[in-house]
Image (cartoon, rainbow, N blue to C red; front, top):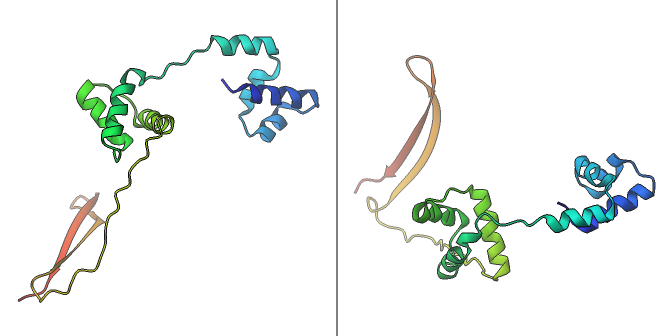
Length: 160
């Protein structure tokens, strides 16, 4: 359910004579949403919004996830999802877990620590002491003329 501000904006634009599609475009919301609130009275809206009580699917795991995030601030939501599957046999979509973790980080002000990777030039080594490897993929045809993806790893090494 949209917030009261959206409901009131729809009603104001309706009173000004706008059509449903024009209201939807102006408020940048779906026309079906406008349709839902178009003929609804304010007391009906209040009654409906008061009866809706959403619970979070991951609510029972909140303390556990919070502990994980505090102990391991670099932890990603994908890792949280994996740990829930491993430790609790709980199946949630990664998007659901991602939203929940994002909300927890905002609510409890848990910053995600960023691990910086250091890149620097490697000192020149004598020939034969250094190796360069490249990876790639190529689509090829097999003996039955079916397309097959081939993964390739190539290395270059200079002799001693």
